Image (cartoon, rainbow over all chains, first blue to last red; front, side, top):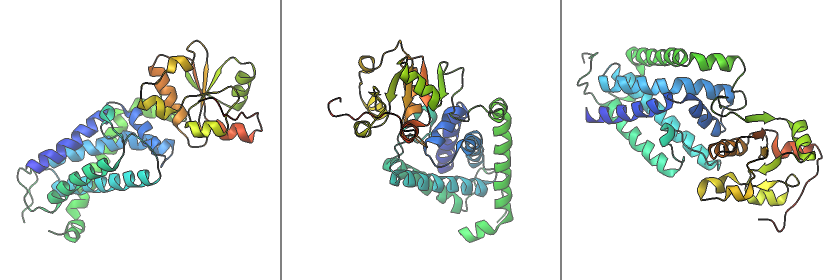
Length: 137
Length: 168
């Protein structure tokens, strides 16, 4: 349950800071120089909500596996993204937590790996305590 | 449960799909205003709203050339100093974005606040000019024009080039 709260909480917090300012987040995505203007915009309005809903589901326990899978998938994606960005030598703000943002660097990869480890534990755990939609084993 | 089992279960994908759909709907609805403006052609060069950054706009090579020729605007080069030294628009001031971000940088001493500024970087996909413009806006500069074509467009147009030995 504690893991659920931590990982879900992190995602909700990250989401709220981005939902508050979608344009800044769009620019952050654009700064990674991976996708163009339109895709950056689309990602900026949808991704934060995805993080928010997945985070809430994780804590509340609705679709626990699905949300853990989504959260893990996102984290894997973030880790690859930051690695590629570092390798390309692009110096960029990660855009992770809105205005509390920081550089996309090695520390960020380590941090994301930690969250990923936690969310993988959730994904594979058989415990579904506090889940609203409990599935019988 | 192992990954294979989890991925095989229909319930998992149903949840993923529902969460995804919900995000798309909520994201679009809650940002309906922005989506409308985007569809109308706004934010195509940068994600800056006109209300937040009045006085910041994007200009093309002919405008830059005219401003440069009449000496009405100050050219601001946001690339690293090494690039600036190798060649820049004649008369341009070197204001590397990295340096302005990283330490106390004497902006006032280098950039006049009473003249229009034309900010440029490498061109193509470069974003330092835009980011410098945002930063300058935060520091109180108001007439900011970003030349998106940048150094590459200037160079390929065969316009004059200045190389630096003594200046910073």
